[in-house]
Image 1: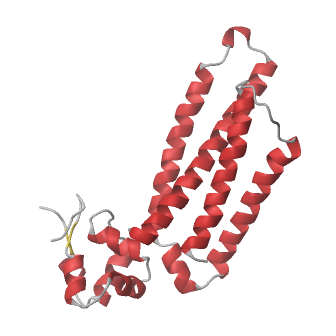
Image 2: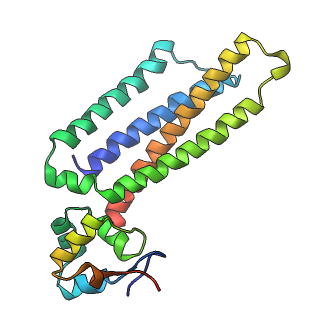
Length: 146
Length: 71
C-alpha cells in the first residue's frame, strides 16, 4: 500500500457514496429527477465498494509491509482521522436536529416516520462520503506537500 | 526555538539540521511519515511520548533538548 493507492481507494469510495447518497436524498426530499437508478444498483454498488475497499485496507494494515505501514498509519494520520470523524459527528448531530425540525408533526403518520428515517440515513451516508473524500484529498496533499 | 505549538515549544528543525538529517531521514528512523516530522517542526502537532523518544534517540539528545513546555 502507498499513499497514492490509499488516496485512490478512499477517494473513489467517497465520491461514489456522495453520488448515491445525494441521489437518495434528492428523491426523499421530493426533488424531481429525470433519470432513475435501479434499486439494486442503488445499494449494491456503494455497499460492495465499501466492503471491498475496507477489506483491502484492513489486509494491507495487518499483512502489509511493516515499514510502509509505520508511515501510512502513523499517529499524526490517526489524529487527522479522529478530527475529521469528530466533525462528522457534529455535522450529523446538526443535520438530524434540522431533519427533525422540518417534519410535518401536525399530520404525523407511519409513512412520514418511515420517510424521516430514510432521510436521516441518506444524510448520514452523504456526510460519510464527504468525510471520506476530504480525508483522502487532505491526506494525499499533506503527503506530497505537507 | 522554531514554530511552536501553544502547549509545546520545539527545537526540532534546528537539531535535525545540525545532525545533517533531512525530514525524510528522520521520519524513516523514527518510523513515522515525513509529514508527521514536518507537522511537529511547524508546531501543528504534539508527538506521543514514544515518538518523542524515538526522535531524541535518532538525534542523540534528550527529549528535553528538543521539546520544552512554554513558561
